[in-house]
Image (cartoon, rainbow, N blue to C red):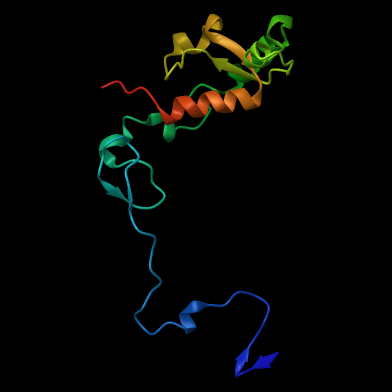
Length: 145
């Protein structure tokens, strides 16, 4: 369809034909570091400045590097298959019977392998309750300097 000398076509438009020479599209602005109280500006897409990256190693390591590999999958399935751990602990407190689908660490292990594998620190939660608890912990983490 032609209208006022502009041709419409299906597909994307290459903007380099519409911008004057030497002009580029603006990039996203820098954002503040997510560490509490840090005013440093960092490129969009990063979470922490170089000074605070080492305080947040959980942000950059894969699940398997954090300990949630094949052994964890096997043990968590075994834990949830036990009759006493089949229902979500938090939902039971509210009188609801919801199947537990995730093993939660009552006390966050923060990389401590002893606390990570301590079964007395585990409990069964449904996905909804586990996501809420993890969200609360991750939005207000405890820092050790």
